[in-house]
Image 1 (tube, rainbow, N blue to C red):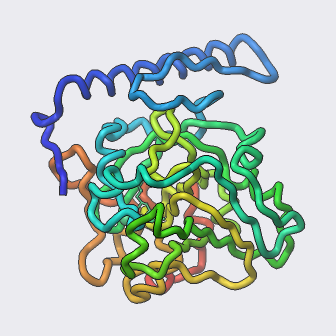
Image 2 (spheres, rainbow, N blue to C red; image 1 turned 60 degrees about the horizontal axis):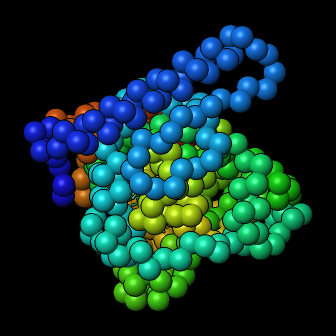
Amino acid sequence: MIIKKPADIPSSEITDQQIYRDRRRFIRNTSTLLLAGMTGTVLQPRPAQAGYGGQPVAGTRPGPFSTNETPTLYKDITSYNNFYEFGTDKKSPALLSGSLKTDPWSVAVEGAVSRPGNYFLEDILKGQPMEERIYRMRCVEGWSMVIPWVGFPLSGLIKRFEPSADAKYVEFQTLLDPVQMPGQRRNVLDWPYVEGLRMDEAMHPLTILAVGLYGEILPNQNGAPLRLVVPWKYGFKGIKSIVKMRFLEQQPQSSWMRSAPHEYGFYANVNPQVSHPRWSQRRERRIGEFRKRKTLMFNGYAEQVAHLYQGMDLKKNF
Ligand SMILES: Nc1nc2c(c(=O)[nH]1)N[C@H]1C(S)=C(S)[C@@H](COP(=O)(O)O)O[C@H]1N2
Ligand SMILES: [Mo]
């Protein structure tokens, strides 16, 4: 496990992050000025990228729900990963995911929708509002990060497919290709990786599909070219490198439910009161920090999402 004490962080990285924060402040001030002086459509300019070397995501604007907490270092977000298709240790995805070919990419849409089909990524992204959303992320293993995602609301995309009244859940699948994803040659999970959301969770304005982070196109290890981000749930819900979405009447079975049903439920809401059978979930270690923090109900997003689970026993529906 890589936990960095502040003294271990080279000053070059601190500078990077400082530039990033200043840039964000600039964006905020600029948009406030624009909003103050105009009505109607506001085009918010975005200054040059902080310079991590990746390809910037064009047209990104600040989105809602961002936390003011300090983003985790780019280096940590992109080198401490869970992506079992490239191995089960945290370093493997960054080292091995170069074999994943993300262009061309398409997503199959199936099930209870009027517009099923195979959609090119370009068509999926066309017309989507690209937003930066700085979210707290919490892994079930007990660590957390703050990630400046670039993405768009899943709800807008789902509406385009015109789901029918039978669509009660949406299931997602990751690419299945042991040549590009060498970790799939081992049976650590029942491949492909599968996750799912209830329709109201999928349509919630906090739920996004991400295509980038820190203003740049997603590195492969973070789930390029398209991955799910659901900040009030444990990280494993955030399925990476999505190639299929199925709209279903019945609750789908996720990979983690299949592999260990007593440990991983369908809902996977961050809940400090429900322990994992093998460890407590009361605290978390924010990557880059030394002292542990208290884990917050729904990862701090209770105000936005608690109503979705009213009347449900969250100890049973963990
Ligand atoms: N396809 C796929 N998606 C996945 C995983 C995985 O192994 N395979 N790991 C999950 C887990 S456990 C976590 S914590 C997050 C980590 O995302 P990050 O590496 O971008 O921080 O991805 C999730 N999505
Ligand atoms: Mo995780």
